[in-house]
Image (cartoon, rainbow, N blue to C red; front, side):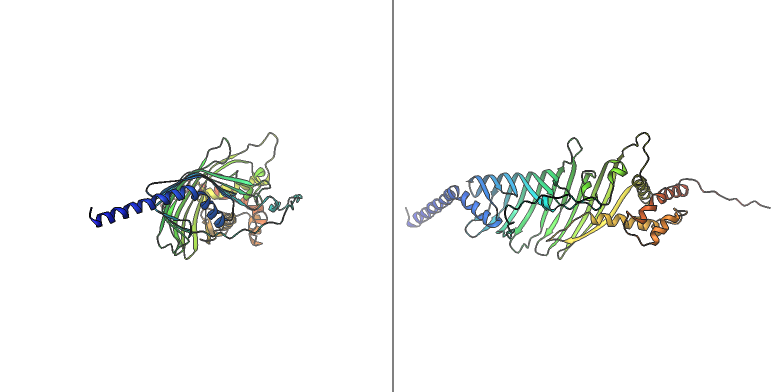
Length: 406
């Protein structure tokens, strides 16, 4: 055998031996090392059930449990390099199977009673001083293609309900390309997410569809979001301070939501559209008189249907930051009040409205912006007049005067 052939064979054998040694080392020490690195980066307890490799450069991980954050049934990574020692991860593909993420907002002791209701004492435990949240330090991660299969998210908001309002999303399937974290992020990422939202047992599930692209380096994005069959009754704690649900006799309210989202230089503008698709009112019991809240609800619905050709829709804009997004029902309330205000200050054409009741004009003259005060006192009287005026104008045939020849 020629010396150069022997050299090549020895080099190949050495490479194979090194490659096998790396696989063996990862199978033996990889689980504990990965747990340690994740624990250090996340500041949380991490437990991994098992880790194994497959040729040529793939890893299978079973049973990942990150305390207070997520549980993942299986993780499959391939076609890349994982440098556990320097905290660098580069993968061509990563798949998470049935991950369950858990998020909370506030705590049971942070709940404030609604305005107008007596404050109830809340027992505060003082077992130990609260620990400060550790700053999240992520390693440099690049993933060519990220796939989440049959994922779920559990979000509990303790700021609106004593025991917390739980919102779930399930059957989440995500496809994302060119994810670059902790690095320059020069590549644009494209993503697509579908899932279901179970509101209440025995009720129809909602659906979510999100797709778009994001540029991490420039802090820019373009996305479209659609959420259908939103259970407005389930979300009542978010607007309970300014709507009397019992008084309005609303038993069911389904909505559809859509939004076009654009972000430039970390500034995000979301143009949103909310439409009421189905509403059921509880009938009055025998001898029961209709409350003012119910009359106001009827009037508002009449106004909206008149303004939007029989539909009940609300358009509003949310402005926030890409790196610190903040959402809330305040934008919806402001848009609602603005739409009603425009209706009685010129938003409805003079042809549609013959006369506004004096009581409503008095409320508007006071500069009222709180819908529960002077404007709401007269708005139910206005609503039916708008509807009748619109019907008279657009449905009833106009009278035609024919001149008589002398």
